[in-house]
Image 1 (cartoon, rainbow, N blue to C red):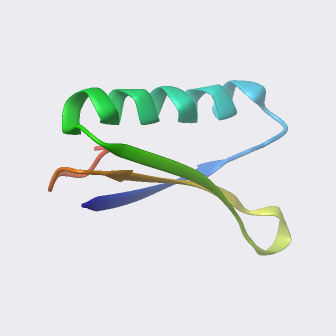
Image 2 (cartoon, helix red, strand yellow):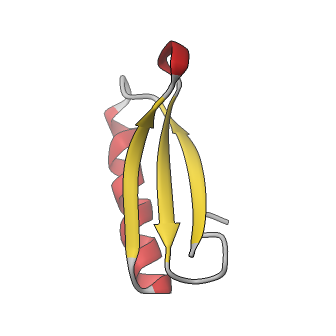
Image 3 (tube, rainbow, N blue to C red):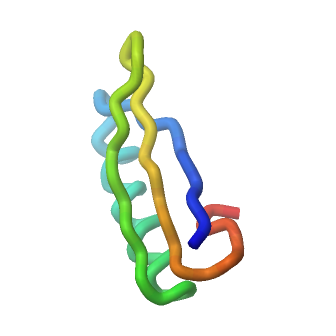
Length: 59
């Protein structure tokens, strides 16, 4: 499984919906996919995306 992390601004709803689109795209291309929002220090939020394949799910 490969994992990619994408920075997300929660004040921009378009970025949040884009994360869901990335997860759906990963599921179509690689099979099983998991996604989760990871809250960091000082408001740095990331979307972690894990795909079943060997390739980078976001590249």
